[in-house]
Amino acid sequence: MKPTEQEINVKNALRDSIKRQNDNLLATAKEDGIGLVHIHNVKGGITVAFKPATPYRNCFMVDVAVKTCSIEDTFVRKLGAVGAVEMFFAGETIQLPLLNCFCQEDVSFAVKQAFTALYFSVTPK
Image (cartoon, rainbow, N blue to C red; front, side):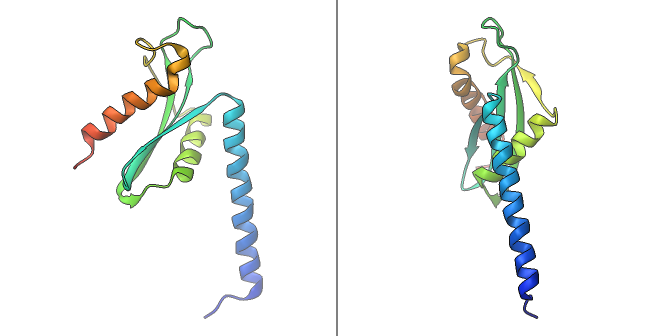
């Protein structure tokens, strides 16, 4: 049975609303200084939302939230970004001492290095 024109319009309106909400969420995260890194294969991966725990230069801690994608699924960066940022804003974070070997300007690099090593050490080949 084909969907009616009204059903199609409702689905399109819902899809547009979700897209706007996701775009607003990601814009808010960027304004708040939350960064994102993606580590993935064609199938599976992780997206990490992160921010230094404090603005002080001598702090080693980074708040991170990690969204995973099953190795049975195709990795989609946008879905990972939205999921990781939602987790970050919901307080589903942990603090890791990722800046003990890097300066605060290199936080993105430190997060990428640490989680790339972690992801590929536990992901089946």
